[in-house]
Length: 275
Image 1 (cartoon, rainbow, N blue to C red):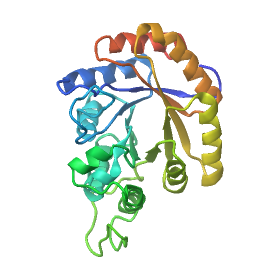
Image 2 (tube, rainbow, N blue to C red; image 1 turned 135 degrees about the vertical axis):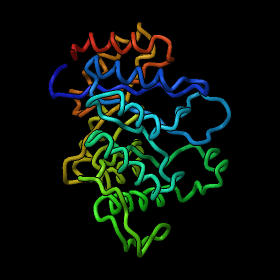
Image 3 (spheres, rainbow, N blue to C red; image 1 turned 90 degrees about the vertical axis):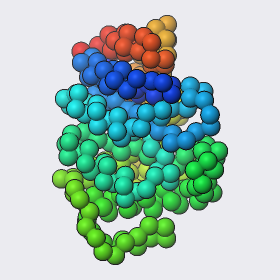
Image 4 (cartoon, one colour; image 1 turned 90 degrees about the horizontal axis):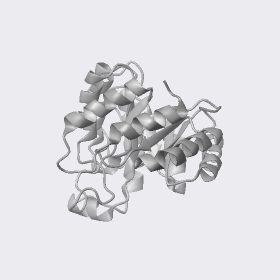
């Protein structure tokens, strides 16, 4: 792969309601063997009816990544991305810290504010204030993973007593997904990383430079793309190289339908010579 060095990651399939989770775990193991440095799973707790129509997250990602952790050695484990305002941040902090104990240093907790208003309505959650709740939950996650006890004061979340456990040796890295101005501001202020979906390499590079300038500190910048067919692998390889040239620290690739997933992962790895 051309300089600067960029990690190649795989977005695991989770778009079908009847998907066998053992298949996903096997694909994660295969990705690691092929030289992929990270694997990611999406999240949708209760989307409109019908998986496969642009929604991912049929499998609960934190549970599934725990199984992936047990079946792999060193590959990074990421959520791309959890819909943070639809989750209890105290429980999520404990889930993440526990998985970090099981697979030290491998988890990247990717989160976003969400975009599907119908999903929020189905869960009885307020869609309008999701950004503010996401910001506060990010602050709470960091507090729980660093301080581990109260007090924590917020408009929506807070506690004065109690002790959090298990406390990670180092805070679980937080990543923010999204390309809106609000997402970039959120990543610059609260996160260790950022992941873009739907940007071309030129736009990605401009956004990454803006993000890092705002943050004033190192922030990992990653991009997502796809190679849903074998015919699409050569173009995907070129996109990976273009994202690398634009400054991406990692490029995560989604490979489409589960059938033939491993073959497409292998073809891209060969094209980029990751072995």
